[in-house]
Length: 228
Image (cartoon, rainbow, N blue to C red; front, side):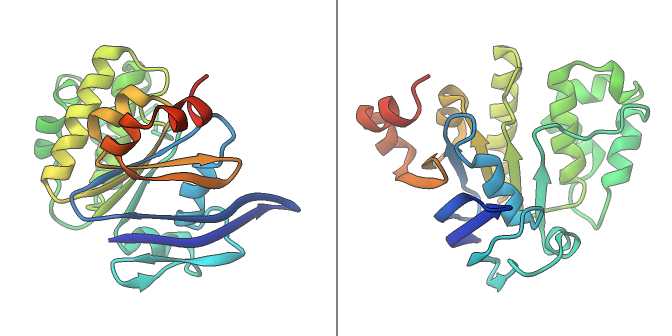
């Protein structure tokens, strides 16, 4: 569903991504793992057109999107949840969902089944719910646009273990619904709980590509590129 090939991205004269390649299939979750500053967020921003790659190509659902404006990339069926969430804190949970509504498919009722915490807080201002609930809301609002592929930037960062487990359950539910998921993560625990495929990035280059099971048994890769 999503294929990234030989991607190079610069910030000014700084060469951030060098030959990045990855893919995500329908109903699959792929984890892009790496330390802070490794290039994870830039990869997702490059896919969404927020950071314009200078070389390579991005193919989504059989169509090249790497030269499209961000709004057209989003309209093509790619949803993006940035690390800072960007929810509307003065609006209620329901109002945030209404802002994201486009097309048919996901409804508030279906999303409340996926994220039960939000059902209990649907009339509360988004700024008054917990950080974990805000992360759930950011994902739910993006799903209201009915994307076929969802990009999640550091979804588990700073969340309590019980909330991380709830997010993992939700991501597995998205996979079962046929949604492709690409997530950038530092948390091995969360990635191992949801991902089928793994990519390890370091200094803007992919250092490992394989199944999550293969990465789990490759202690040398994890020690070299993921250990803190």
